[in-house]
Length: 276
Image: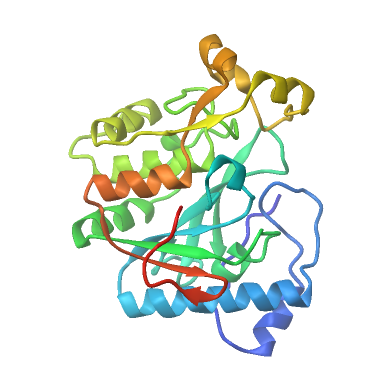
């Protein structure tokens, strides 16, 4: 799969026409597809909302979240997030994130423009942006400037990766491990060490319920899901600790990393952030 270049955002039909010709898509599906004009229009509108907010904040980096999967049955809203960088070689306001490749057991690190980030087959165009305190943002942007950091990426993907797992990683685990490493006051040895620092800083994963009967009868077996990453006791109970976007929001807030949050639901800015 080709890693996507970032797009320079301009509110013009020329950019939309260029985007419509893109056939390389990072994420869960391999098949190249053309987004519909309606999807492009919605993605561009969301991207421009994000750009306006990011430019107004004058920060070098933020966390940006989207709703790619309906997780309402688990009490969750946002399913995926990435770090959005102002000064990136691929273009201003480029999202750096980890993505599962084609629903397989593999992942890659991607640099993606905001229109692309919101052009995938999403549940809706809601978004949330988290800005960091100046020191946290400075350390994180410096750390991300030297990506990829191979020691913090395990390409063996598991959608429900056990937090702290040495054998598997998912997109949310990568975010937590990168942030912990960027803020560390000592050298970080590896991913396990990074997660230990996050736990010491107050990170707590969410518990997602997946009953055994649902696993077996519901056909929850695919290349990008490995239940065996979790101990037998967890598999029997059906209560899986998982790093969710909500748990990342909670961690950043508890650790004192968050300066402020803005959110848009149904295209409208919320006066206060809603459920995550």
